[in-house]
Length: 248
Ligand SMILES: C[S@@+](CC[C@H](N)C(=O)[O-])C[C@H]1O[C@@H](n2cnc3c(N)ncnc32)[C@H](O)[C@@H]1O
Image (cartoon, rainbow, N blue to C red; front, side, top):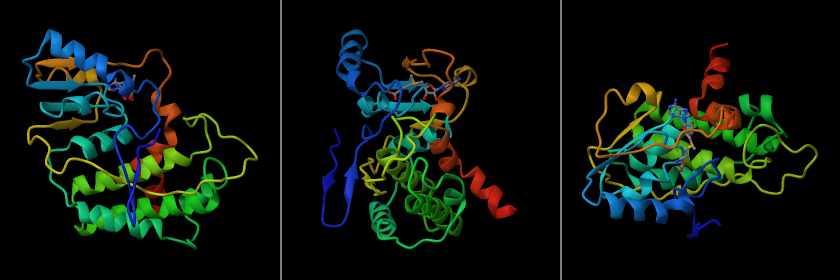
């Protein structure tokens, strides 16, 4: 259930307001109970298959190391746990501006995904917003954490309305798109522990170079690749195809 809070101009979201295969948010009371019983004195935790970052979110009083192979997860983890400070007003202003967008031109998203996972108009918005975030970042108007928070807001908004059963293997044909894209302001801590680190690499390599009192290991349960299930979020987060189109 969403815990979004309505304000006059925008809604807010928390780390668990997304769907993700193997998300451990509901297991947090069990996980924190075991940690408190077995190793109450730890001061650092490495969540090396972090996914949504739900497990890390239960340990914000400690130094947190997150890692995930998917860039879309890395971006969300950096948004929630990054050591860099950010200006909440910048995020609010962008979210309000993005939600007011209408009558947008075609772009990479409309050309490739109109009326599949999203309606044509929502594809136009997604493509425009992702491009705009990069323009702001390149101009120096937003820092790396603000960029990550805005991309996270976009990914969560996409997840909320996607015409799927939660992942992007397939979309339902012939349905009416009854929800439209609305970005929320992620309620990320402004000042996280300055020693937090977020990585985007193979855990088998990362573990050779990091240290933590506790390592939480939650790998995929089978050979199914997460990037297959979440390719569209990954595509938008990485913006690789958008860059390809601009260069062409
Ligand atoms: C079961 S999920 C973790 C869920 C997470 N605990 C949560 O609560 O959201 C496994 C994660 O491992 C990531 N992954 C798969 N292979 C990896 C690798 N070699 N190195 C780092 N991450 C990997 C996947 O992208 C996926 O997000």
